[in-house]
Length: 445
Image (cartoon, rainbow, N blue to C red; front, side, top):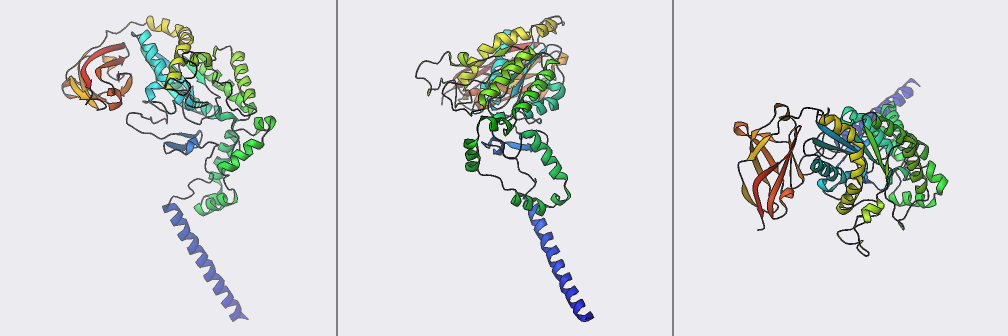
């Protein structure tokens, strides 16, 4: 009997050892291949967050992946250069909070409304420094915008904060849970002991399969209005709370303006979309902030039958085109000028530093679409040396690098030199903006 027990025990031990070795090898392989890094993959209807330019975030779900180049993304995961954490004494700061409609999906950075607005205000007020912060990521809901605003902290203390929220993402049906519940669940799963090994995470995913796009859209088709209000990425009660929190926080530093996302007659809408729009209007009115419904302005310059032309204000049922953004800014400017008057009065009371005196020293002829380096020499106020940025033909060229003998060298991307003719440059400093004769002539090949 003892021999039999010993034999069984030995075989059981060998089997257990084999299983342990197999699991260990599998775990090592999964980690080397980086499989199942997260126990619960992020997924939303439409899949905007699955693009290569997105990185996952534990609190905001996703932000943009940092990148350089002509369309940079800063360390905060937002389009554009990294904003200064503190506001300059002669700076008018505009914070633009939203989703892909504020980010400027499918248009160049300088064509999105935050940059068009900044350019327009800088022309109106050349003696001050105008900055705009594009606090917007494609696919973001009000839950994510609220979390992003809290993370930005002092960087988001705008003299004017403009909200272009609730266009579409909040009301889309949730894949697993609402955005807020998803963040809580994912945090709990990441600390669960049985999900620390990658094998455990693979098993969890097998037991909780992600629905396909076809299954998701079938779910949408089956939802009625009441179900849609409670099974959305942001249920309407949370939508209301998010808006109130965003408005309250933004109001601490300045004025707030609300934009109603345009809904064009005939656009396909989910049955519960009007309820979200109604809630948006109610919260803005409750807070006493000005509200812009830009649809008329965005389509004002569009003649009958021009919907498919380059001048169309929309690229699709949701996203404005470059022409639509320009029309939006024209309608928005009176609101912003009115909201920013308090700050402008304060700025004008600050002693203005002597204006910078700069000139280009290497004028050149460049082919259309080629990049170039422009060197400037001259004098800058001492406090301006850390807050200098340039635009060439309205394209952001960023901050300069130090050249020889005190020169400022700006790298001008080919996108800024895409049209024949002389290139115009605007250099912005805390003491205001100055125009520079670049001496650059862009010529066709």
